[in-house]
Image 1: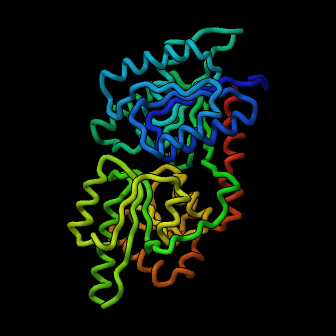
Image 2: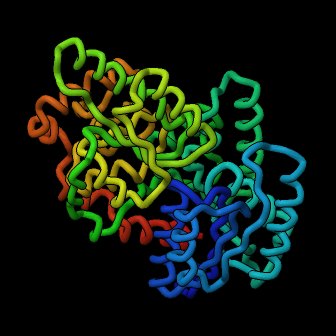
Image 3: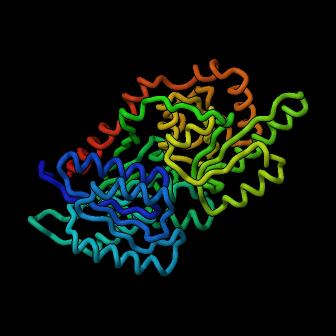
Length: 381
């Protein structure tokens, strides 16, 4: 592809979490490089955080923000959403259609399949797909997993390039879907230089902090159960209680609040709605990332850049951030997480020494390098 200004559309489902962060950063960097960018995403009731996020994204979207109904589950409503995507593509005439996550990737590729035309002997738009975990989290032996991975294999026929955000994601795709039959690249997430600054703690900051989507995949229940184990031990040893803060929203939040109360943590744990990460970091000293599955989470990079200790589960691409032998990594098990939390609480300085070097992180996970690599991959056609 010639070195011309590109018309780029990003398609994704939910306007929250790491996928939104990824698209927001790509859109900003792509606009700065002289491209026109647009986005297609879920039409839903936005909370205060989502409204603020969209406000920050809109100035970078010369091709507009287009909201269509997108259900989390597979159903007949997907047909209407694919047709809506197709209609938008005919109007916007992008050079690049980049789908993110299972739903975004499906709509982007099927919408392009319907709209695809020949122009100057080059087929447009080119279709790229980034799983961001998504369907790859399914169990390959389950019926749902078999359906998902069969669909992923079929959609490869409509894919010009796959972009994985971690080596783990590439390896999982190979194991569950098969060896890619189109061009692919591993381009890791990156954050801005401005984020490599410490965040001051609030006077009443808790000992431990969780922030993320309130659903089992992210392990909020593991955080609560680990905190309960620490408090049982503290009570038995006549030590002060251990406190926690949980920040985020999601379909199971009330369930986790009930679990905390059931385990006797009502006085030792606070729940807050979703907020920007650096605001949340003021509310807790040591960050816990208790996920059952991840790809390459931005939250780990953001917290480390703020010079905080992180306890993370050994899942997904987290070892690509922390190192295979990092003491920060734990099994996704409440008792194992509690042991790490106890270690970090009793020797905070020693535990922080096991964190990755911020200078190395800054060189390996740069937003500028990420965006440049994505554009180079686009232009390899």
